[in-house]
Length: 480
Ligand code: ADP
Ligand code: MG
Image 1: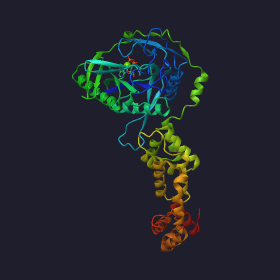
Image 2 (image 1 turned 30 degrees about the horizontal axis):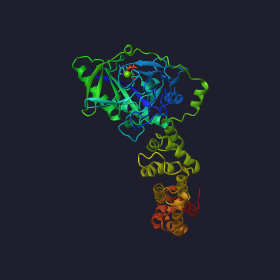
Image 3 (image 1 turned 45 degrees about the vertical axis):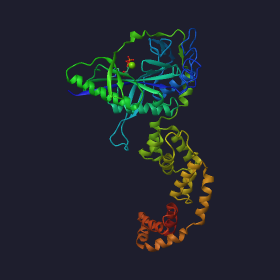
Image 4 (image 1 turned 30 degrees about the vertical axis):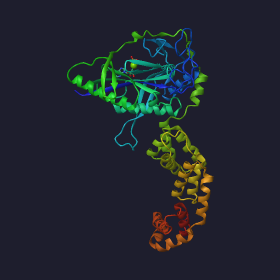
């Protein structure tokens, strides 16, 4: 029998807030263990939690970017369990009334050819709720240490419907979540820093079936490759079991990245085991319309929407838009440069090819302003600089930190001194290509390319093509 894999993901992302979800302790990474804590974080007797408005705000924004309905009222529940990563013995979460309900995430389906526009699909969400992160346990030999710096950091948990059907689709989904959240400044989603982790649920069912099969869950996968490998492995494992005529046990398994294998952990606890109940320390929160309208109003255009718009409005190819659009700052930079000088293709190319090549992947800030980049393209369009000259200048500006005026001054001077006599060049080119000139004059406009080529060769490749074009058309008597 053929089986179809069914996958649902629970993605946890740390929200970008200064302080923790329910206390004023700061959120910090890579600090001395147990220094970013306070009585609430440590669960000391009598300490009371207070909700961080910024955490709510960012969760609502996540809901808006993923098309969720936002609850009018949300509230907090205690998820009770005993484990040393949490000194209170319960985690504050939202079981019954989450902030965001439903929604969907647009994903780009993996295609064989990466440079063609692949089909997109919507993956339905079940909910997004706000909860607190727990402490980090490190096991060494026969003892364990605990760092509570992470405890209490606000986490949004994004729960998908079981809409994914392969490890590749699950990766595309995770990439999309990360792109949207980083784009909107909701979370940095850096998996290496543990800012994004996911639980994956995998089941199989006969192809074409409607009912869901028994699922197996893997908790806390903290890398893209981990998630992908665990899913691929689990699909293969369940297929083998089903083909042997056996049944799948409902369980939680652990992924061992070193061994590239999984091991059984425990049979799944159910809801009752956590004894969820409303947290008596926290009031329900009403999300009023003014607050929500304000957030909706300042929500950025979604990256895939922006990509479609860039292709339509500016006629840019898919490959370039898929470089410019996933990172908000780049798309903004592109449009800011356009506002200074309107040449979408040249500006997009200069950013996507030249500028990004000069930057290192962990550069967070763009090394020059949009007006400086636009000035380069303007000089080329006005015939004062060759394309190569503009690219060289860009490299110089990035490396020295000089702005356009400073970097270009000596170069423009030089260009002026060695200015070619374009008129003379063009007259000679026309004289040496009588056939093309006649063709052009009789209406075959593409014949100009041959003459332009001759002029450019005579100029040793140093002439500006736009200027040649203009002068040639003038001389040929049909300037458009
Ligand atoms: P729990 O909170 O107990 O893990 P949920 O019902 O909230 O369970 O579901 C968690 C995730 O598991 C969701 O993303 C959901 O889509 C997914 N899921 C539920 N049932 C299945 C199934 N049979 N196969 C695959 N994924 C499933
Ligand atoms: Mg779960």
